[in-house]
Amino acid sequence: MADDVSQDALEMAVAGGGTWQLAGSDIAIHKGSASDPDLPSLVVQRDVRGTVNGQPLSIPTTAQEREDFSWIAELSKICPDCSLDPAVLGSQTPSGLVAARFHLRSGKVFTWSVARIGSNVTPVQFRRLDDTGNTSTYSQAVATWVATDIEVSADSVEIAETTFSGGVGRSMLLQPDDSGKVEIAVLNLPAFVPPASANNDVPQVGTYFEMYYELTDDPPSKKARLVPLAGAAPGAPSYPTVSWSSIHPQGQWSELLNKLRLDVGRGPYDRILCPPFTP
Image (cartoon, rainbow, N blue to C red; front, side, top):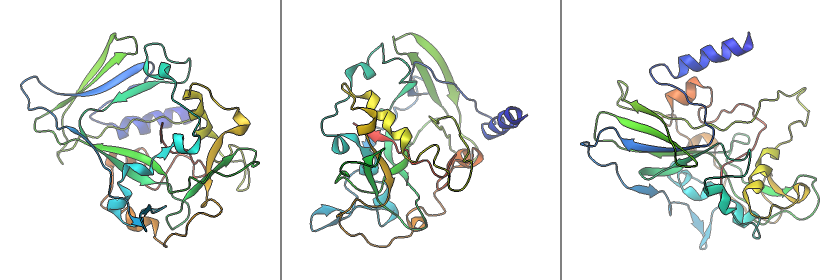
């Protein structure tokens, strides 16, 4: 019965569109017709993060500062000895690790939301799962959703799929709704495990993040992997008090994510802290 309810909810959320289950998929966005104007160039939102005495702030203090790409957790700063395994980008990826790759060549890429930990914006710290050893000096607010805004000067866009080995896959032509928008959500969610009680510790906060280390060419042992936990690292610089809602204004709203109950400020499980990352 629960599966039927979930299926009905998903169908209502994507009414007028569709869903794909991704496995071994390279996904790209193309203009809907060869005669349409070219899509805009790719721009990554940078250099809008605030600084103090020349050093980056550990939290965003305005909605514009929140958009900076640097809020995405940077694995090379958490684990300086870790390097991305080239096989992750090849035709034969490590088994079971990569479901899909989204190739962005157009639009503005920016941080849509940062982790909500209480009512104010809060940095996270990175330390070992077994709570031993030193905490990383890398400590900042971290992105939970990343968005791309593509302005299209035509009546449609195409979502096209190829396989990792280069084979032709599916395609979907999308046209805007009455508001002139097309929304696409790319979701990678772990299996939902509801808490047994308000105090239970399974799944542990941050444990999903440790899977990112599997994408490196020489992953550290699981017990040695640093994962995000709420709160600034010991000795980290002080930061101003900024309400979480002030940098995520009410106008920042996605109809699709809202219907999926994954809009800004909500998640499938409040205690999961698994931000996206960059190598």
